Length: 219
Image 1 (tube, rainbow, N blue to C red):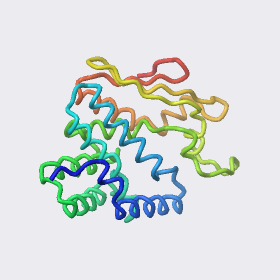
Image 2: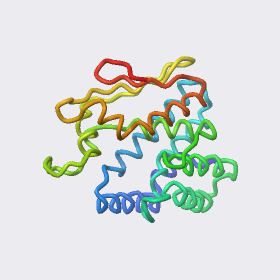
Image 3: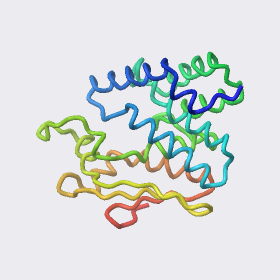
């Protein structure tokens, strides 16, 4: 049975896990990891693979991995990639997904967090790129500027963000930041490891990763 992205999105268990996982992160003071984030990640992961010439099924597997990638946060933020992979296995197995597809999806989920991540296959690479490039001010939930930590400031400073995918060439994250709120060095202090991971993921897909901030290329 070919479980589709639409099947996963409409599954009530999945909806509950995403909602409850985000509630956990709200309590911990993290930025938004709810339906807006996972939907954006799912779409971009699919778009990356389609643009680079991968099959529609590979792109769909990437979108499923993108939608499920953060459910492990319902257990704990620590090791959420690994616990999320186990949870995704149970969900997809219950839905009757093929073992090959399940293995591919949970491998990607288990390898998406920068503390342990590696782009082990094309699906994992697309998930990494889609997840780590979702930087935007709308993810900041703390409305008290006086209590902003550096993560709040960096995310809130990003007023425009887009990802450009060019076949046989590059994947480029283009952002515009408000430098009064956050300096370019602040951005790299928080996201350097993520950008290095994006570079490795792009290389896995046979292209170059680029980062442009306020019109100036930094990677």
